[in-house]
Image 1 (cartoon, rainbow, N blue to C red):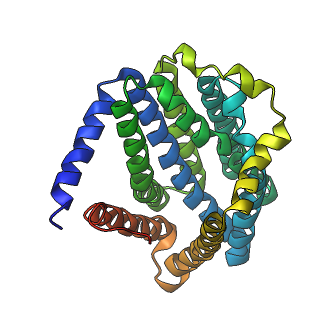
Image 2: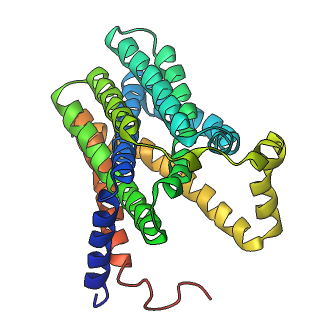
Length: 299
């Protein structure tokens, strides 16, 4: 733990550096609202699916949200290379607000659950370009390499924190109200994210480079797969990541069942248990700071 305190101090300095740059500050706040809303929405959708069809519906919805988004993700990431990143972020949020808002209206109107599931799948698909566009826009807003490094560190920290904060927020809302209101809260967070994005002042560097326009969509989208095929280490990492995602999906289903049926915590308990996992991940991330630089983590 000897190395933990100076690294935490470094993290605090990173936050300070980012927030002194107005555009980076608004971008990170937009990312915060977006990712917190994402995790809150995941909990709300899981609870709704369980109320409608039990654990089978939860697993099915999770699978139907994940697979199309995973297939489209390599192509969605190209949007940030072909169009101004700031506009991609605003368009992505507008689409997400539309899907989540429509899902909230369907839940409150007690329509057929298939409509809600379809809108949840659509929301998952249109979410995919956001992170890549946000990451691509950051260098255009940073005024120095140190500021860029700090911004990337803050974005990663926010993502870790959101795994705790998003489900916790969903748990509180579900305990006090119902799934329809939880959907509306998520839509409100996306609106807040969009407001922050409107305050960002993108530089000319936000425009995609001309040489990117000449490439074909297929070749660019498949470039990552070719890189994985050539590197055995990358293949191992991708297998591990795929296994981790499969386990996360199974855990998501089990958490809903455990909170409502086994532990009798109610629908809010689904958010609380997810938040507990997020808290553990956050603590682990903080503790890992004391190991970074102390020894090699790979041969």
